[in-house]
Length: 371
Ligand SMILES: Cc1cc2nc3c(=O)[nH]c(=O)nc-3n(C[C@H](O)[C@H](O)[C@H](O)COP(=O)(O)OP(=O)(O)OC[C@H]3O[C@@H](n4cnc5c(N)ncnc54)[C@H](O)[C@@H]3O)c2cc1C
Image 1 (cartoon, rainbow, N blue to C red):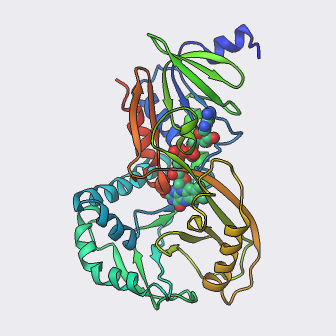
Image 2: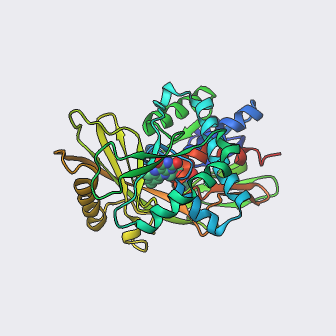
Image 3: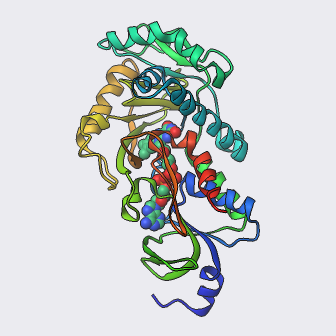
């Protein structure tokens, strides 16, 4: 496309920082760059008409790791590393709350509950036996005992009598959160161009030439925040992982409140007002879900529907309203990749399933790589 002199001059010249991706990482990165360099010209390029990865598709859990996840992490990491992981999520949520404000994203704390299927005897025993030890390990993060044993008050079916609850976990309205961040970015005078796909870049001595589906331009620095789509632009150890969810129609007198997970975190659900949002099942087809194509599979959606009826709402009539998917970025290691990859190019990717908790901090860390 031939752009006009005016278009180049107003939107695409003298760019100091170009960010690819307007998810939670890209938006927080832009805000931090603006804070540090108030006069800099910052541009965000986004391939979707809205952010189109995971940040507007997720379940909105403000979570820090269930007890079984903490125990599983302890098998592969030192105690210090596990405490650091949980602390990063905890501090990340506090940063998000400070930046966006609780009201703007409907942030609520009703606890995060881990349910154990009746068949998961061994896992349940292990978690119950180690409860006190894990509470004491994580006391430096939470300042109090986070995990508590509680009865199955919501009448879930086929699960153990008790849940293990992290009393500090919360939930938020994903759409409101991203909308609030977009507003902050606009207020800061940062430009976002939507429906623009960055197709490649090449370094020059003083900056980067950036090629998009519609035009080419120059920027002093390029910051890549494309998470599950990172492999299209850079060569880092991050793979796409699709996650599928559904949401019910409103359910009269729904008592369920809070965030819940079961089967070692492979399934998760929460109330959204008087609806249930339910997702997971990637473990049914890991290979098939290693894709950056949006879509819902019959196998996974069928299983979600079955578990919704049999475990979550066994005695409550319900209808499914919507089904959708989002694309996460995962790797062998849980740690995100935040680093400089060339003289003028940087990335902040591989957020896994915890991007709400850590996305604000990763965006800030990415911006703080600039000298
Ligand atoms: C169904 C689902 C449920 C989840 N639930 C939770 C949860 O409850 N709690 C939690 O903490 N985390 C959850 N996550 C994970 C969390 O949503 C992600 O970790 C987080 O949103 C990642 O943010 P990001 O900014 O790194 O990536 P994204 O939000 O994916 O942003 C990347 C952006 O880059 C754009 N892009 C990609 N390539 C290009 C290109 N070449 N040119 C231009 N733009 C490009 C994409 O369109 C996208 O908007 C969930 C994820 C999914 C999918």
